[in-house]
Image 1 (cartoon, rainbow, N blue to C red):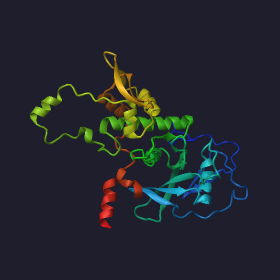
Image 2: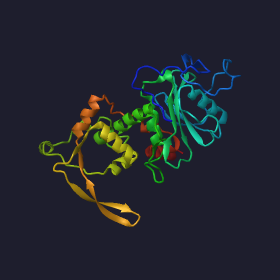
Image 3: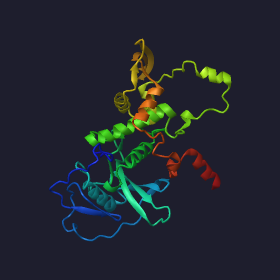
Image 4: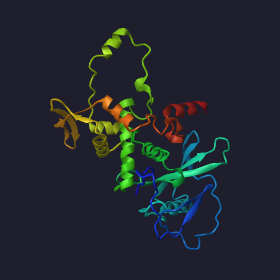
Length: 331
């Protein structure tokens, strides 16, 4: 189940009494485990070799942080070991050995001054074929690197890799049911994603464009700006399609943010909706979301308007279209 890398409490879970591995070394850091994992007894306590650079294909690289895609079928032993190690910090993890139907995405930080000095920070996994359109099955940031917004980075990358913007892509979300910590993590991630959309536009927009004045604005334009702002109408479904989120997740986040106001006077509007029998009209209850309310929410919750995932960081088939065209022209 998805796990939270930013729990509400500053304290780690109390280590369970049945742990078979008391502590581990990751990189050059020694730290305690939290839960029991199904390690063979003959391995526990033995010295092991240090892992080399992660296998697989690099799909993201930005300012030292990279994400590597690893196919569980191609790298069975590596992903089994990763799953067993993750179980030391995930109470409800159940997949350890049947890894062939999963893809794993490893988050790595590389010292820019020494390419051989790198650290595995965490990972997420997802099913290759999910009938529920899940874009994530399990997520974990290892304890020494928690509380650094890295979980949000991996969540954002999981949405990007579902290819929801492309033809044939799907809009999905994490595997359900979520743990309580996972629910809190995703709720905050969804809320911040929606706040950026209302203030900036779809993912990849200028994080501070909303307050950058136009140098070409005329006096007449300035006067016009004082008039009542034009309302933009959209459905919850359209919001979800713009940012790659399920309708139910958009509704959950909007309710928790407390930024939705009833339309005054309350009214219902006719809207055309498609169905199996064609296009039909139905009553849609209208509500209002004011940009100022979103901005106040963002300030109150200290939301960084910069998306933790940078579009220019994606590589290969996930790279921005402009970069792909430049690469083709160079060939």
